[in-house]
Image 1 (cartoon, helix red, strand yellow):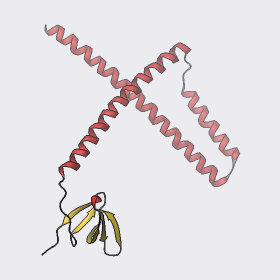
Image 2 (tube, one colour):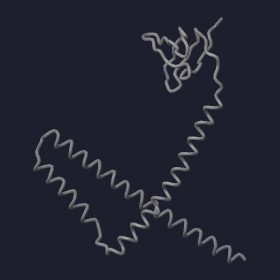
Image 3 (spheres, one colour):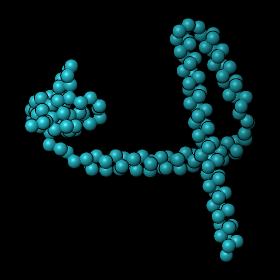
Image 4 (cartoon, one colour):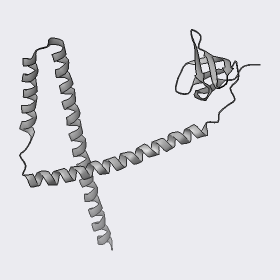
Length: 169
């Protein structure tokens, strides 16, 4: 029984190792693409400054030659297999990323629900939910509030304000 358990664990371990390697390959490929994008951006910046087409084309060809020298010639069958594997990995990663995004979204919504809306009155110290600046609430008309930040005033929706400090009586 212990041997069976050991073999089972070994199998799981190899699967995890393969998955890790495939994710690493995907990450490396994406990093390479980001690097190439940065390289292209640098070249376009250089061209924008000196308008020399000869330099641009020469640099571009040099980068292409370097990248092509790194590639290995593969048969059409191998290419197809690699493409299928790559698509599978990308699909797996997309699913995982989507799950993580969903969890984050739910967590954010949960945090927003947990904060009870305090009654905001004229004279209270308030700030915008996504902001840092604190101001004094001066006027409330319908669903709009005028907030004085000292050097300037701003009209904002009451929904986008949060109470920092109640007015002292």
